Image (tube, rainbow, N blue to C red; front, top):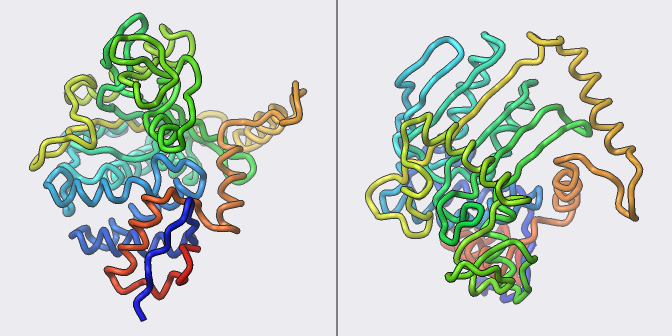
Length: 360
């Protein structure tokens, strides 16, 4: 008997099941099997770590991008300019994750030879969580620094209209319990969090967003622009640094010249630019010294006196804890994403992987 799609407030799915479904959907859309597996892994690992706004929730959008000619399922990514430690990579309108991983491979290869590398990627698309790429560099024993241009969501300090993207910065180093992973927007919050609050009917935090008239709002339905990080002028400055190191450096469209992911014209890529810098600790203080200092750096910070019940953490700790919990109990999905994955599984005859009462 055919299984009936369950209706629930929240779904959970085993990481390996989610990865199988996502990879099959991407392959069916025309993506090469190796790229499908890599993109599926990136989305699952992002959701596993609790970054739901940039994980499996993006799969339907990426499939739509392929269907409408925004993302090229079979790109030929080409180094169009290079020196020993630097390269400019044209992504041929690839899925952003494919482009980001190609750039990461290039950066690690060059840093392994020269000690440091910078790869700028142009002609790409939305690439999900920046930490996917910085962590890949860290797993290769490097320090990874990653940024990407984004479509305009953020009003400059004292501004009333969206001009800059959320322009994330991710830096990662170390491994295991001593992994440091910073992944932050240069806005107070990403748009996905605004939308999630709206879906849940929850108010926003003060200082997150403005309405169409440029007034602060805590109502997700009234949000027109996001606010820059912190005191405002500092967040704007950081956001512009990201634009400088991505779009300006790559000769790509600036933030306010980019189309939003959900409204990009069909038939052409969005021309997003990425920046990937990789440093090999071996050529600086040496691997052993670096590993020792990383342990001290992370452990001593965690041992700092706390002001409350929660201990002091370092960037990446909350995600590592969440990943362990979700690996044991399944990745939580919002209803829309859960039902979409259930439908894809049924379409591909993979619903035998799913129970009759829900996704688990």
